[in-house]
Image: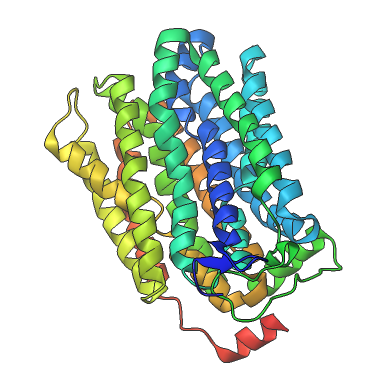
Length: 429
């Protein structure tokens, strides 16, 4: 049925079930994004209360980012084996536990355990491989656009939580912010049980835009073996390594650097922390428009060229960022926020599309591995930028390095070859 609405048993038209599934998936990604918005807000309060260095705190962020990425392919395989409806609530409980338990910590290793391990595992299970799974099962028509909308869920979480978390931290301390995220993650669980379904066949319908029913695929192998075999097969192709390399740089220049260190970098130049948090929230606001537009473009244009354009423009903007940081807001910084926001995760829809095109049914799992590379890049940038700041007293060098890397990612993306018939047939078998 290619219409937004379908007919029920009485002949009346109703909204296609795929949109309900997409809606609850969006809410779940927003809930998971809440804690992921907190590192930049909490770095300075944790330094002041515990005396930890930026490097020590950044280590916990790096563990979070690595596990966030490494969990993604296994979570995708678990969703194939046990279903999204079982995996997502467990992930939300881990996020809530990790954020809630931080209020009792006294040592930096406890920060690594709560902030790094528990939250990393929980948010990794609802990473972008979850988005790829939802859109791959429930949408044929408008798949790229819906991918963009769901991807923007993370930015929406950042937009919704950052100003609130910054205000709570300033007025009531960082523990109030951590507990708020815990409660928000728990609140999403009932919605998942009520509205999320694993396959269209579970509710007697087809994917949105599909002509014929697509029965659920049963994978006899375990989730771990499924994830590892997908990596083994994909790693034999140059396309996988080009996508993984470019996406690693994507992670380094977004979550790892700007997402973690923009607020303290702006604060170093005299900008109030709440103002810097509002600027980062604006990045999230503009990212919603940018990612949805990227999904629309992905349905119509060559994904390789779109990636080359996104990474190239991001690299140029990072090279000028150090000259824009100041003690007060000025128009140039607002232009940067607008521009960087539109480009923040616009890379996701074309990357998911390329994984789906080149690797067939295994596309969501393969994308999970590509996303793992994204998070490794983010982790290296989070720790590296913290060490650069500790050694040099400023973030400027980190921004320059990231800008040059983004230009390299543009070259990697354009270098991806068009799909080969031999590879596509082999992988689908």
